[in-house]
Image 1 (cartoon, rainbow, N blue to C red):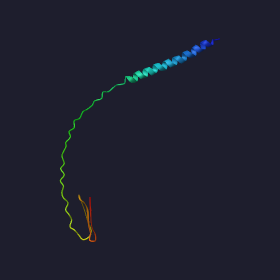
Image 2: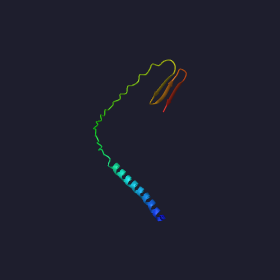
Image 3: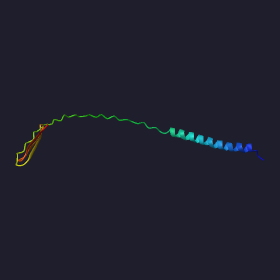
Image 4: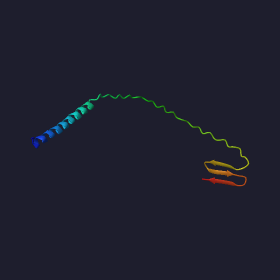
Length: 93
């Protein structure tokens, strides 16, 4: 008849040996993963030139249309001028 201490030692040994094997396997996997082939990254520099052109805007005065019969509305810097046959209204700033 075997003693209970002997059975406990046997079970403990198998459990510990499984843990040790797992630890060694994990360590070897980490070493293998860290020894992965590393590639160097190359950085290309590109030169860019910026061309700035000045834009000249010419103001062309609008041609004033001929006054026709009916209502006319003129808008300028001074305000709004409304001319009509019936009513003559001037709105200024």
